[in-house]
Length: 279
Image (cartoon, rainbow, N blue to C red; front, side, top):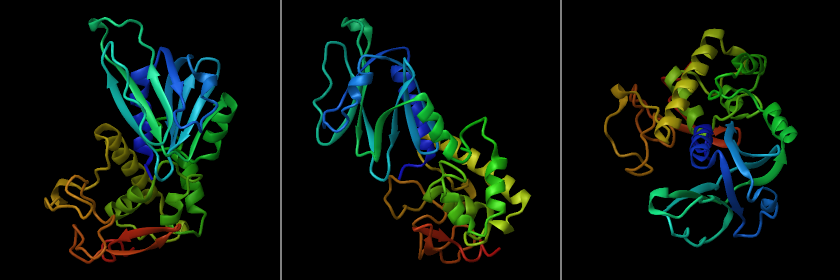
């Protein structure tokens, strides 16, 4: 499932592509009938919170997208005088800038195709606010109050690994970030939240802020410090980032050499180093 940095990066890009002008919104797959409500409206901005993306339109309407496990956006850059490629496969929503002119100097315009989301719906401002209200603080929100997350974690007997995956506690963190940040800080993922100290929580929040901001910047998850990057080929392929422990069960820890192990937490696989994360 895409983690929070992906949605914030999409919000930044879609704002850049479409903000300030009308857009065409269609549903090639036919499963987003509400597209007619926003088709032709002025696109105000895109925002994100946790794993939720919002396209905001004039008149207080927003398209709410949750990518879920399989959702993603394809992007097309279309030259003046050209039409975007015909939708291929299961395209739930297509958004495209309305071209003001068609002269060569007008420049290309963007189209984005949404495929396979868990949710794609038109909602109003109150419903947008309700999504925000049910989520925990987002490390990528500069106005977030981390104390809300600390209070929930530190009075819970659930494991820290499980709490980090609970979007009502802290939003935007997924399976990769939780495994990696806990290794970086030497925290046992099965330790109860009640045993997480103030300094440890502050370090956890600060590291998530830094890592996820870098994820927005580079368009991917990058967690390995230079001194621990051995230039190896990741198990998931040469084009994938190197991780500390995520999907590295059975391989040596990059920090201490102990074998990385895998277990279950919050109904997902979790990876950790039994030596580095023994506290």
